[in-house]
Length: 335
Ligand code: NAD
Ligand code: ISE
Image 1 (cartoon, rainbow, N blue to C red):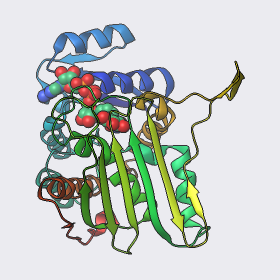
Image 2: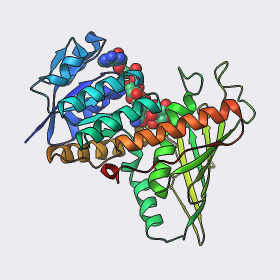
Image 3: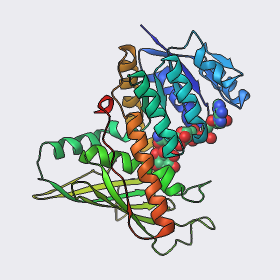
Image 4: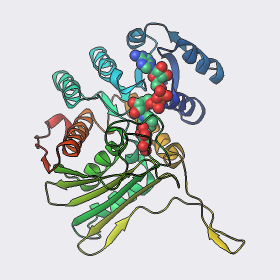
């Protein structure tokens, strides 16, 4: 049975997801869309040539009888209300990160699912579907390098247009918070943020880079360099130092060019390109699971844990020192 999907938010990533579902993936079709910018929503429908209803009233898409499942790709502050409404109707909902902009908001979503006794929510942490990260997880799970002792990560982007305040943490590093919990199968117990000398290329008033230091329950120490004005490219790095070896993400594959007395290999510049295959796999697996009434991806609980970590990092950045992160027992539904 084809999964009929309603998309809330037809901006950059919403349009991307509509295109991948329409052009590349199987088992689903877009039957409805909505956006506060109705012209934009109608344009996407026309350009893709899809038979989808454009809802003027955003919440109406959730109760549309022609919609089996929802994708929330609107601005972060709107996510919580849409996800809670989808849970009310019992429809599966894929929500782009953040699940909600506060830990309390994420907790309300967790509580709604616990009350229902069923998982309906998947959060858009697409790195879990990246082939290299999956191989890295397999390597760690197979005990190939012993226990993980130290992890070095870097999240570097060329520029961060529109970034302000703590977005390098709350918008970008959240991907590291999720992937590290998943890779290490461990929760964080403390956070510290060290501010290096500020890059002159960062927008006025924006601290960049940040050095985020996390500690897990089993004592693994993590450093994340978050550098959103790194200029030279989009470069995601992760190296795990274990007791008997080191396991790291490889550089993405590209041609190695020997020319004009130089040895060169390209570096990507866009997160969309770096993770395109991960996004495709993420959605194909979500569609396949939703058709069977199942939900296997990053859960509302994962979204909540990331929000707690993000809050601790922001508090550490502004207050200084080491901020403890309270560990909470994972409810049975999410184990
Ligand atoms: P965008 O600004 O391009 O698009 C957001 C769209 O939401 C806009 O078209 C806007 O009009 C619409 N919108 C706002 N409020 C709405 C409402 N109440 N109802 C319906 N539509 C509404 O932003 P984007 O870059 O596409 O980001 C969207 C979301 O995706 C954000 O939460 C962002 O963090 C997330 N995102 C995730 C990744 C990832 O790697 N997983 C990458 C980029 C963005
Ligand atoms: C963006 O919102 C994303 O989610 C990307 O995956 C991330 O790498 C980028 O830094 C964010 O701005």
